[in-house]
Structures are given as structure tokens and as C-alpha cells.
Length: 110
Image (cartoon, rainbow, N blue to C red; front, top):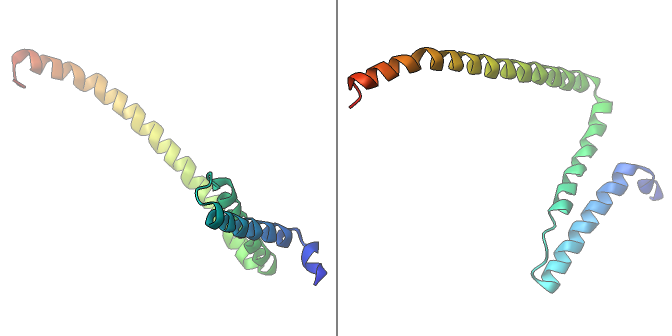
């Protein structure tokens, strides 16, 4: 049973759960406590235990790697889209603004 503490993720998981139980006990005893959002964020580290599954299934590792690479390509495509839309909006303002000024002088918008 002492082999449980030999694996770092088990020790981290135990400390996160024990800290959560301690915060629940203190909240029930004291009442209003300062925010424990940092400890709640540490709960997310428990998800690191899922990484052990990746070692057991290389096919899942390949799928996850493909997903990460596709997300990188989607991010670059989104950035390029923002740049192109910004440039075309600047061109549109430069071309349409003088026309709007002339129409406003004629009283079309009034």
C-alpha cells in the first residue's frame, strides 16, 4: 500500500482532495472564509491522471496529436482571417467615407 505514495500524481491527487476536505471542514466551522479559488484551480491538476491512459493507448496519443496540430492550423487561419478583414475594412472606410460626406452635404441623410 505504500507504493501509492511512490507515484507523484497519486501524492498530488491526495493533497488536492485533502485540501478540499479541509476547506469544507473550515467553512462549516468558521463560516465565511476568504476565497479558495487557487485551491479549486488545483483540482484541475487531478485531470493529469488521465495522461496515464495515453501511455496505454498509442492510437489515442496519435489522435490527440492530430487534434492539437489541427487546432494550431485553425488558430493561424483565424489570425489570417482577422488580418484580411481588418485590411478590407480599412479600404472600405477609405472608399465609402468620402461618398457619405458628399451625401450628407446634399442632405440625403436628413
